[in-house]
Image (tube, rainbow, N blue to C red):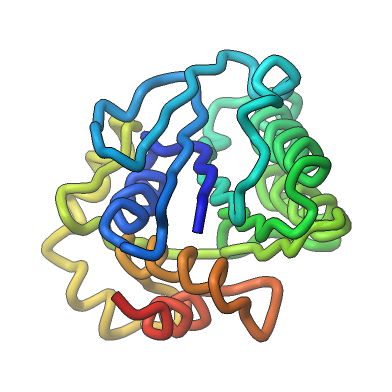
Length: 224
């Protein structure tokens, strides 16, 4: 399986990259982003690209892939709706529309978030925009799946690039085992998410929107 990965330097993207590099069924990983992963592996190739709303200049590199894991995201804290929408809606839609032309049988997995508003009419800005992105992507002629994780436990040295998120994780880390036991329907791990992406790309899933329990189930079925 050949995979394109967006957002490989973020917490979820790091997990997806790690699991792809470990999985023998994944033969090629193309990371596209504005910064390098800093990793080296025979099957990892990287393209630095500044404008992720326009992939026209790298289109010759995008054919022949089986799956795309779109993990690029940002917190809405302190952002206007227009800025947040560009990153959360415009960028993934541009990527998916381009990839659909070159890889019509591709599986496209978009990492959204628990609480995304599919009605696009709620009062919470980030949820509206996430919901709009999900809806637009699900309408495209791709095998699109949406991951909606809630609490994510980072494993294997993976962490967020955002300082305040890192600080929060550091504060709550002693409580993480309790959280994982008490609210299993709202908790998963970075390893689960990375494994689940590979499993869904390979085997599909019963539903096109996967919350935390379905993500864990897909991870369990992915094998090693």
